[in-house]
Image 1: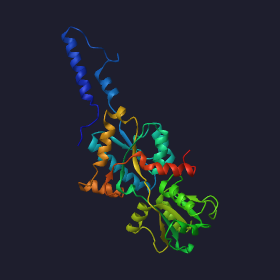
Image 2: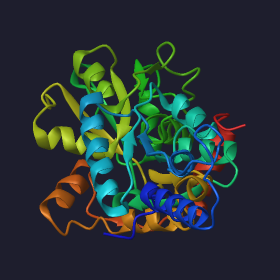
Image 3: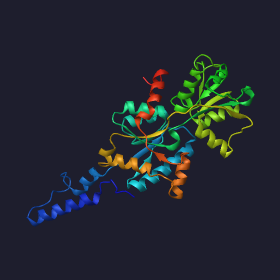
Image 4: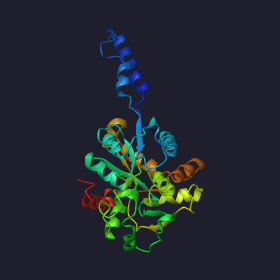
Length: 319
């Protein structure tokens, strides 16, 4: 475990006691309570608050909370600080709370990560999962829609005039990149579908809505689709994969520009290293990586998401 960055109250109180003893030895009296000079008050002022972590709500809320609570425990042990998981209501809320300094570390998708950095000067990309360098989206369809699997992006032209749902409006893998690939196939989601497209709010719900027949087609991230089908929680006789997109960079962790100020000089780099050290070296770490659908955590840079920013601006999702 690394050297903790907590400011230790006992050290401040001990210093206050030493000063008081020296003052007493010199015939002086220490300041009285309430005068603003007590060691306890100084300690309270200097004790750092918790590291507040969060993630975009892109999956079942109970599964998300379980994963992020496990990450909280890991980081608390590695860094020697109190860690608090802060759930958010939607993607936009995570970006807003990060910008106001109410969140310190957030696991963002590519688009929301770009949005957060544009709104929060000095925010740093810290790390990503090994699967995020080459992430992909999946298009799925209800079998009653009569759609066959397609071999390339151009084949998505057959989705014109279908009842279609994205995930969240700010999702990279559930909205931004599917919109981009549809556009590349000549399908305008705003004009060429059967009615306005839906926005399920999460990848899990996209599967459920297509499986129920509420929509004929949906798009979601590959990791959730693979996880659900492997777990047997998708009726593959009713809903099936029809296309997996080309690769792009996606999820990553972003740290607040105020981390060092709040939790001590060098904390940002120690936090980055703690994420990179999550390597499955014991059963708990292996389980945590599996919860993220990853085999390892690897370095990431802001430049990894320049294409996401460019597409976001082209589609009007970043202004």
